[in-house]
Image 1 (spheres, each protein chain N blue to C red):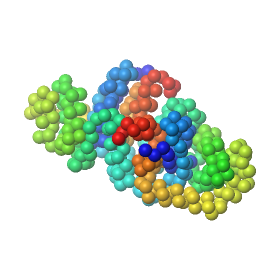
Image 2: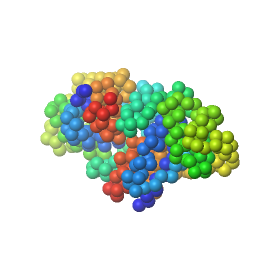
Image 3: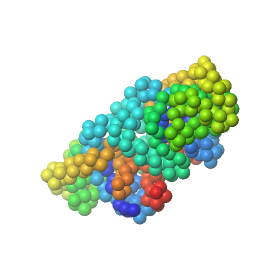
Image 4: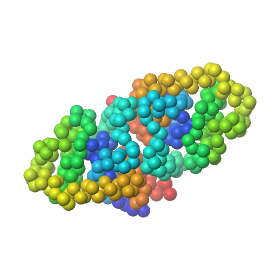
Length: 198
Length: 198
């Protein structure tokens, strides 16, 4: 049994935000470690023919109410963003750059909160810079790194890897070869990690 | 807080089967009662533009593995049916007829098991008759009732009611006005019933 959880997520995805608020505590509880892998969900939609939930109006309407309940369950702030959907390329690249600078987790959680709870438009450099500053990173250096080739390549590689392994939505987790789609799979993952589903 | 759980489900839906194996015990645990409402998921797909998960190959592939894990978690039998997808009109009507005959729950659970674990083609009268006999119902009378106008009307009414209330998939639960989609929402419903999400 692997004790690594690969966490494929996109800042534009509501349920990725919800999962991101839980996954580190979840992993700790189960003796696992998390590898955060931002990827471009839109590319996975293109590759698989899947669509964002809000493409179906009835599903979009439900999603908002559903996410509100999950946020209450998790006791995390949530306010559906005015600027939805988010073009998440800059946000994802900046999370990778922050990880390279040793501040991946605090930056990522602050960025997700800025978008999913505080209405900041994190597709824009100014908003990303403010997040960087808030966690003690040099904003200018972070934005420069976010535009660098190694960071761009890492986001592309994560995306290609996700698609090759069958990812069609976000968040998606892998424990070894087993894939789990959705924050709602955490209870199933807990049983899997305990060896109860063999 | 309502203590009634309306359970909209379709025999053709994998996750409806999984939910059906759990919902009565779940309701009992939380002091609630279940109202079983078979409906035609295909009509909800037509009305909302949603599609069955298997319409996206990557999603269909995941669904099979995912459902296998849920079945292990729930400790219920599961074998993906050869004759998938199921035309569920007769099966749904026969569940309504069995409920009118006072045997809704045992018949429904036996029918779902016949399809989702034993590979029976419950779109066919012979298979439905065998299920009826197995729970002590008169098979001929049940099939006649399944073809009667009041039963047809009830299935149509359930379907129209579901669509009018925003249902786009199955299973879907309502607790009062709050909708929950998927067997994976049971933990969220538990918190809701305890008043923890207000």
